[in-house]
Image (cartoon, rainbow, N blue to C red; front, side, top):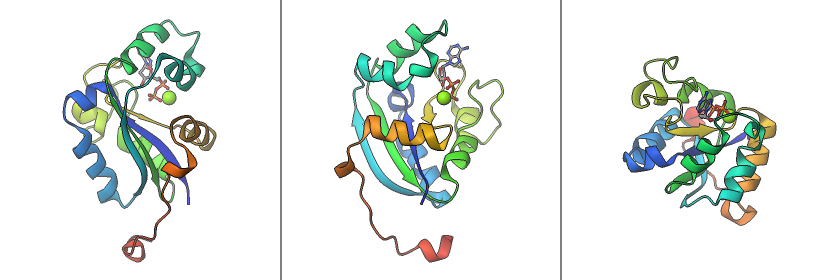
Length: 148
Ligand code: DAT
Ligand code: MG
């Protein structure tokens, strides 16, 4: 089953949005297979956002994502990577649709509440950066037959 890496950013944690965000993905039918509240080091932040190294906002991005605890998660389900991106909404909240997480809660691009992997390759890379094998739990969920 497809897996993705999602993370409530420091602004979402401070604004008490962890529960709401987890609830949205649960209600959609996705299955949580790993989660932890953690403080990201500068080194991990620079690796995670490596693709943006040359962008003018890179320094601000790294200092923001390390500014407080984040809630890191791995979710699984059919088409979870693309669907989670849709549920998050566009990167810039001025473009994110009402009903999406960013559309509902975010006001600026730099404080946009949530991160989600954008492709199978980045999902695999990001899951590996944030979670060890032992932290990912494979378990049978009995409601699956009501979802799939
Ligand atoms: P996403 O988080 O939707 O995958 P991204 O990978 O393009 O978006 O950028 C990563 C993060 O960097 C984004 O969530 C917020 C920040 N960011 C992107 N563009 C920015 C900009 N023009 N100014 C400030 N921060 C920006
Ligand atoms: Mg991205």
